[in-house]
Length: 356
Image 1: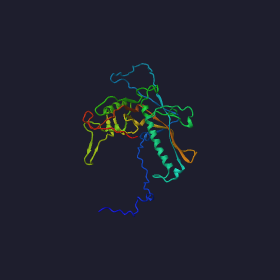
Image 2 (image 1 turned 90 degrees about the vertical axis):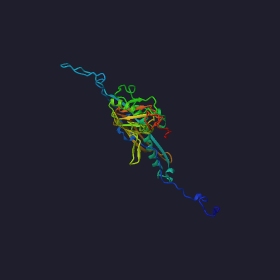
Image 3 (image 1 turned 135 degrees about the vertical axis):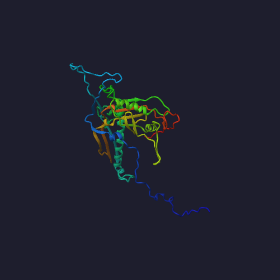
Image 4 (image 1 turned 45 degrees about the horizontal axis):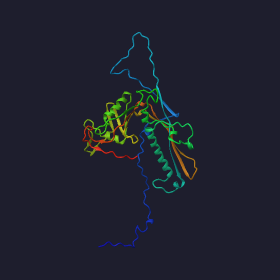
């Protein structure tokens, strides 16, 4: 029997403009806002454009493979030796800023998910400033000496702004940056080369880095990598054991969050702002963020029918011991292997483009 439609019945197709919209009064934003360095490192005060501190080190008595033991003769005069001075190093204060401008009409209309556009944008820009700061603490390179006012009172180009050295650059500080630095005071940077069936990032490479840092006095407590390198580390095949199966809870544990080797126990953590081919090892007790002035939210002068705001702080990275920083560079992350790295039959996962 054919379906008979009563065309006299009023339906949603007849008066679509008379139907109220159905929009959830919710705002969802799950973008990552984690800033582990900026949030957790010690906060100190910077009182000059160049924030300085001193570092020192003790050389070992002699080479243990060719030992020379010091001694003094009985009934002899004191022979005076040349004394070393501490090394004075420093970083430049870096101003970071976010701004916004919201019209009066936009603040007056009914919005979805929040009640006030101005308050929402201030909160959003605060989070973006924190992300900017976290990124700068890692990647910034010192540059720019602002010697004269720029266009309209702000920096007209990145070359006109003062920038600090981030932690990856501080790891590279050497005699060329500060005359008084030597091997015992400098950070440890190891460039990785070569290929393997899966990935050259192995426990042995990490142990190489930790060994050199240990000789300088660092007690590394954390290792930071990008998501891709974290997957590689979680696929390490150690002592014939990789995955832990729990039949009672019906779950498989396939993650390495702590690594305990010859030079102590370190946490393995993910940082989204690290380059994919870099591993960063830290003794974090020596890391600090020095503020010239704290974060300020300022309502700016009105010159139109809108409300303007600026959010700004000035700070620099304070690495009290560069020897507490270690970097593995150029690690291969083309493939992620879930089996023994020496076994060509390992399951290799493809690498997909990662959103930013």
